[in-house]
Image (tube, rainbow, N blue to C red; front, side, top):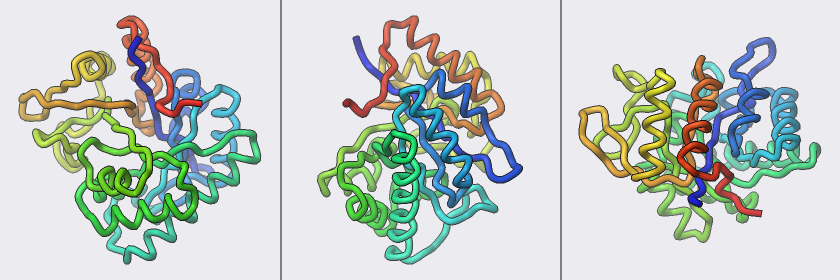
Length: 254
């Protein structure tokens, strides 16, 4: 039986601002990318999400980001590599401490938003992220887009690297994500999303925004937790994968 992971971004509520339904998603997904306070999330909310993840046996990853609460981490920040390394170290270490307090652990790192997309091609910032992971905990894996610069650098540095695909995002013909500023970048129809993921899982293919077919090999598929239909999407995807004979489980073993 082929195994594939289903992940979602969580722990993104902040103060009185509630975002996403972490409790419901944790009944469906196998991995949780937990915000670390830089793009979203506060310590109490992060702790609740970590506790629920532990109770559900869901694998935890550090969802590190640029320091950009106002922009939800979706704006590029042109910071010095040494500053970015320190920022990422801080976020991983904070989440590891909170996770340990509720009997779970951080197993991987998945950058968020603008940082995720930037280090697909920016070698300096990608190297800064890799150095941060190694400095804090070299046993942590990295979850990133296939063919990314950060994946290459992480592999060369001895880190485990896993490939990610996106259920609810459109793809460019080169395999990168369509910018959110472009029409059609986000896919919201539940049935369409489930069908796309089923095709990714079974044949490693997906239709790009221009109608061409591209190759997308993934160890994990992401459903964005801030989408209004995130829970419905996750349930539809999980149901389709189960029906097609896939074992939905974390890419982290043991």
